[in-house]
Amino acid sequence: MSLRHGFKAEANRLAVQMRRELGLHPAAPLAPARLAEHLAIPVKTFSSAIADDARIERLLTTEQEAVSALTVHAGTRRQIWVNDSHEPGRQNSSVDHEIAHALLMHPPGPALDVRGCRHWDGEIEDEADWLAGNLLITNEAAWSIARRGLSPEAAILRYGVSRKMLTWRMNKSGASGRRVRTAS
Image 1: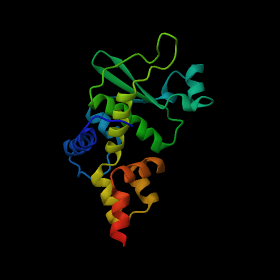
Image 2: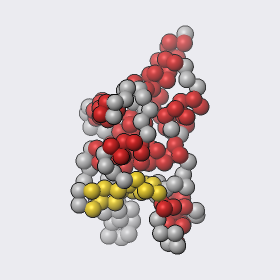
Image 3: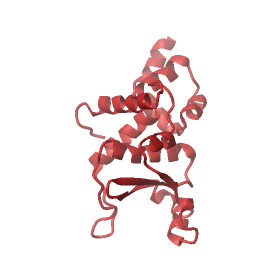
Image 4: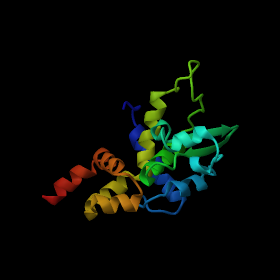
């Protein structure tokens, strides 16, 4: 993951700013649904789509890994659709990834290229991944988890994340190292 200089700090500041706008402490959990509502971005689930649409049914069953979430654009308005067949922690990450695109003002682009293959801009996807992680667990939250000695299970429940996301944020924030240093 190659991010532009200063982006990681900028992402954490933006995640803290979103909490402040909602009257939350920088280390407080922030539910993606609450942030989406604050930003006036509706969030819908795949299963709430047309019930008899075989394409949607495949995304919820046999092709679950094909799409985690997506944003539909209509002019300046956005709507996030999330694959609700995924675990809640993954859904939260997916919704925050789409919110991150909005916060970073990434321009909408085509989902597929001319050959019908998925269009992928690695730079903006990396930025959205990084900011999504910070929206879920700010550096301050990760350090608080370490300081308080929260178990992974307790932190997962408190912040609504997957174990993979918790581990990633604890490592990337430096909080895992802090826990080791303060424990000795």
